[in-house]
Image 1 (cartoon, rainbow, N blue to C red):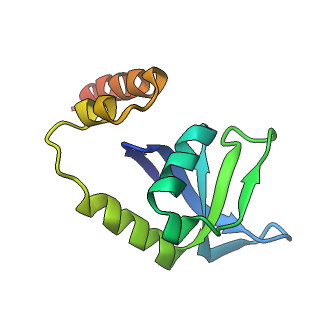
Image 2: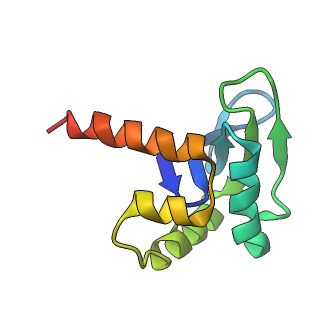
Image 3: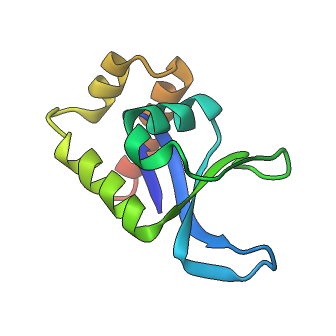
Length: 116
């Protein structure tokens, strides 16, 4: 699952254990930007601040936290409840995220427009 939020872009997949086996009860919330992952954690400190985190240069998503599915449902539910804007890209611009993130959203919007 890819999530684009005013906090950043996240790829969420099943986490693997130490032996490399997928654990469907745990999720790996991955980010390319440490600032974006920190923004998500800062928005939900009561849920995410104590989650195990990993930073690696061996992946295209170098910044990660491990969460349970139940906890991630709470985060997504709260993200949904916070939607009070009528234009996502404008909201991201107001939120102070980086220009590169906003530019990426415009490019993604353009690609999505081609899929009609």
